[in-house]
Amino acid sequence: MSEDNSINSKLNFKDIFFTALNKWYILFIALLLCISASLIYSYFIVTPLYRSTGKIYLTNKDAGKISTSEIAISSYLTKDYENLITDRAVLDEVSSRLGGKYSYAELKRAVYIENPEDTRFLEITVTTASPNDSKKIVDTVCSVAQEKIIELLGIDRVTIIRGGNVPQSPAVPNVSLNIIKSAIIAILIFAAAVLAMVMFNDKINGPEDVEKYLGISVLGNIPYQNRNKAKR
Image 1 (cartoon, rainbow, N blue to C red):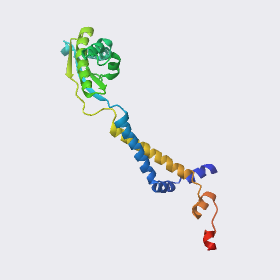
Image 2: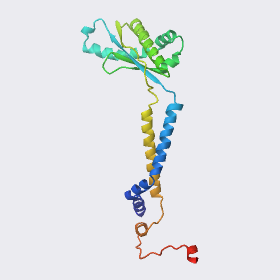
Image 3: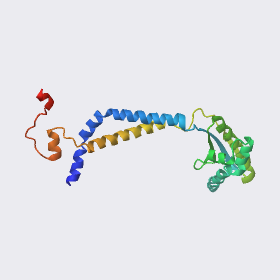
Image 4: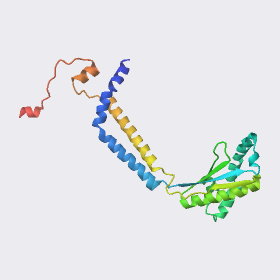
């Protein structure tokens, strides 16, 4: 019980506040170091990646007479289309049309397919180190997927709603987000340092500390006098 009281007495919010106020320069240094490290990482270490997205739409000839059950089946089959687009049947052809610049394995890692819930839309996203290549790959994947889905899965019509765009800024790294993360880390480091200073500070700075930590009332105090000065 006394141990808990000792810990609680050391974790006095007033002490924490004034320690933080007096040691503000630690926060400044931590922010400077963390943000500098974040900027160095973002601009000089990590490779920028650019993201481009295209969209296709899947329909049948009898689209105007679709029942609710057919919509459910169609949504379920959309997963098949997603798998087909990242299959060798499509990506090998994409690689060939791009002159073999990207292998099947590289395209497999670069291509991401997303199907918005309860729709027949497929969003095809490509992420590479080149903004122009990201657009070219998206456009080629959409074109080859359009042909292969009709040919292999018997879909009557696949419409390319939107081709890829040339991204103007990288998706990775997100410099602003990295700066925010580094600032949060710096603040946590500062908070931990301040708490450690307060918890492990055993100095007695005055009568108040004697009463607070030792439970003894101070009747008086003897002023400190430098002996060397006294001899002079």
